[in-house]
Picture 1 (cartoon, rainbow over the protein chains, first blue to last red):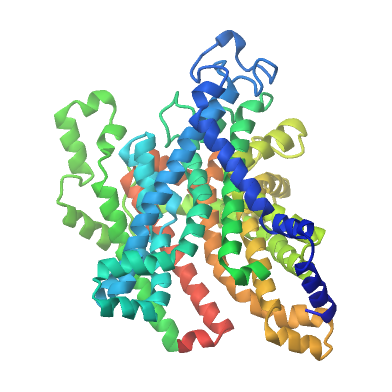
Picture 2 (cartoon, one colour):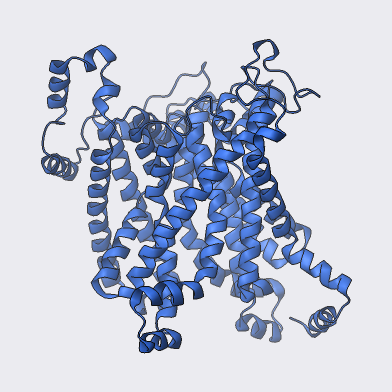
Length: 293
Length: 337
């Protein structure tokens, strides 16, 4: 960094409130935008029955495949169902699945990795080899096989995703606990007489939680993408349920009626981008080293 | 170095063996019953036919016997017989693999050719329009659902503009060349069918772009971050103080050091590609492994599923091994750890 740049930065640091706001916007503007998008989707999902103009399964064969208009803002699908209504109801499934998969998979993986790192010795070795083993398989292929075997339905797809979801959390948690386990505060807690469960859950994990939260946030988008992909293949929800991936699938042959497949896809894109923005922002905020970049 | 490679090879072999066990257990513990999906409704209600079918496919043997049969077959290069195609699984895989390798190699090259320079430029001109462009591309690339991107591309470039051909590996009016290597782009010129070759190239463009999108985003992002990290190091400041040319600093000092994380990404990127092929091939009617995997999964064709996952796990382990070894070659400190 040249002297001029440095001087400029110092000047900037002492700049007015307006300058500070500008810098905040530049650093966290995207994250804030992402949070707004997610919040909007969450509200739409929560209040879906009240904010949608039609019931999600209302079939109207006379008005099928109608282009976007004042009555149907995003048009209608092959059965004359309102696309906007179904996109909004679809947010319920996607968000719920994303949270369940990432939270359950994350908690399980984190506990496994943390226990492995804290136990050391053969237990650590065995648990981490098991984790490595799961990395031998492309997650979607394994999840696809399990989902197909369990039978179609959102619950079974979530179970299939959970089977392949925990290993990355186990790996991250282990490396975090390893970096913490020889710290003085752990020795102090042990000297005071706390047991391993207390030390792990109340002392170490709270100190290592930052990177885990970042991974959870970024992963929510990922989980929504994978679920939509499985759903697109017909391994997600049972038909009349409105779900984004299966809606794109229903409209994939309809090139002139582009609205049927385009809008549910845009919904996925915005939600996933939202989680990516928030995750990146959180990482910058938690890691001063990355913030400089 | 040889010792390091041998120990890694042994580890990889153990990993593959354990992987087959996991696949086998998962394939056998899930409650889905292949008999019901394979036999029609009438046959599935006839106990004699069901028992005969179970016996025919060895489904009546104890679990460990079946694993042992699977394992000894595997050592002889026998992955069993697919329930739905009635052919050896290995033969099926050999037939479908070239189309997938062709598609994913082109996509991988595409994402490297665009992603690396874009990431480097973005880091060199931070906060410029190139940087913003690179970040937008990588963000949309990793956030857009593959299957939706495929729909949009097909709708725009095939449906509306008519610039690209529709789904499939070659057009209906072209004859597939005689199979020599299985790769369309090699077999067609070998047979002198240049029309077919160009037709195949045209068909490859859209699915390759769709498949490359996510990988491209990942590579751009990692290259940019790694370059920025390298540029913040002290040796860059030293090089600059010495008065070295900017280009020499970037390409001679920063780039080689930034390549380590990018190499690791090679494995990850390949994983992404394999994940993407299932969706991309299904939409583009691409006669590859991704579509075959999907069809096997939906029909609960266990020998096929186990065969594919085994092959893919082996490929994964080999790629990880290559990444580790190239890592050790690029950074001698790795081996000392």
